[in-house]
Image 1 (cartoon, one colour):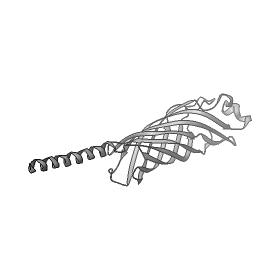
Image 2 (image 1 turned 90 degrees about the vertical axis):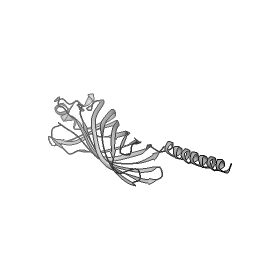
Image 3 (image 1 turned 30 degrees about the vertical axis):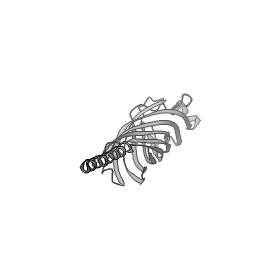
Image 4 (image 1 turned 180 degrees about the vertical axis):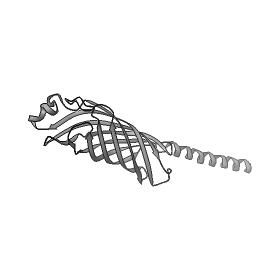
Length: 213
């Protein structure tokens, strides 16, 4: 009888321990989401003159799903101010489109889940929809440079974004994400009179706080 009770107690302890381990695994925080913001510089290729670049900013939401120790998937949904600032014929030309941009990314994380600081690299497509545009250029040069009344930047943009950064664990379910990213457009982004093939380019630094769900 005592042996039976002892075996039963050991079985119950083992079952409880296994159930607790399963519960921990089922509650593992593979999905994280939170606010992101960034600053950088943007350019447009194929334009005449001296292209100095436009200061760019963005803000929005970031998300990462990483069940595998090294591979993850995610991206951002951001409002991004981009464009160009150049001089041509002794005058300064600026164009500032405001995009709703969605970079999608495949992540590779170095280290393991136990590390507080984890370097990463990522690559993926970047899709964008132009919400508005603000152009600043001399009226007397419009016919020679751009048809301002029709809107300079096209409505849709597509590119490739790549970058590197680190994820820093700040708490049990809180990560500070720091990234340096470059986006290279692949579509003709500007409707200019010369009919050139002009692509968006952007280099920026982003930071975000992602919370585990």
